[in-house]
Image 1 (cartoon, rainbow, N blue to C red):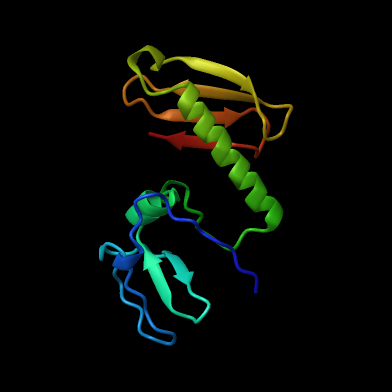
Image 2 (image 1 turned 180 degrees about the vertical axis):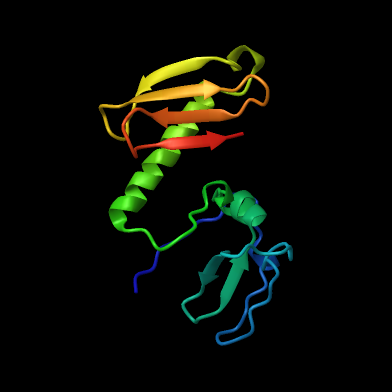
Length: 151
């Protein structure tokens, strides 16, 4: 197993870290600020096997690591193959770009925008913001390429 180094940001106080002993019980609290840790925390080990785990806030403030909530695009169903995963990631990137370029603002409601689909390279994306609720609809003209509705 390879190791990597992680350098804390200026202001990090190593004396505040509570280390768990090897084979010790891991608590649900951050080893630095004692706040709740996420489902998958940042865990750091010493060469001797002592561990410390950090909440999202401390990951950001003490190490400069940004975490993201992926619930918005949570995959439900059987595990994806690598090619399906790559396509899903590309679709999420397209959706994020469209949300940024065509935000929910009064001037965009009821309007349509057309773009070449970056997923299939030959279809046209029809992008529409609904008038009454601002929902974003993205539909590719190629069958089974991309259809998305979001608030």
